[in-house]
Image 1 (cartoon, one colour):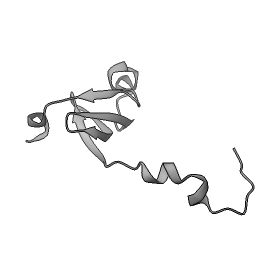
Image 2 (tube, rainbow, N blue to C red):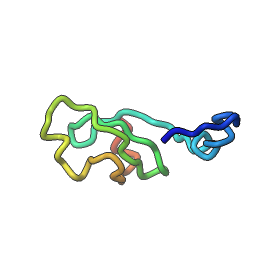
Image 3 (cartoon, one colour):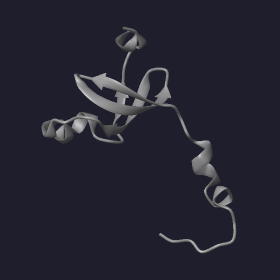
Image 4 (cartoon, rainbow, N blue to C red):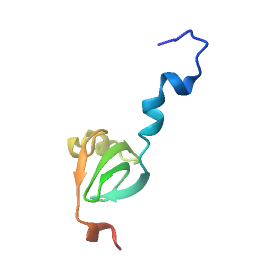
Amino acid sequence: MIIYTPMPHELIFENEAKEQLPVMEIDYMGIPVQVQLQSAFSCRVERIISTNPDDYLDPRIQPGAVLHYSPSEFAR
């Protein structure tokens, strides 16, 4: 989509700039993924960082999937 306007980008897309949550890389079931923290016990998969093509077919870790965990899982 192309928007032709003299208005600054920040005014048009101001909601997108405010909603930036922290992104981190984790190993989920041995698969490296990049997630965005949603709450203390859940995160949303942003992208899969793996060289194994089979990992991209796993529906549990597709981008947009919500992962639930306990804090002790990542406290290693």
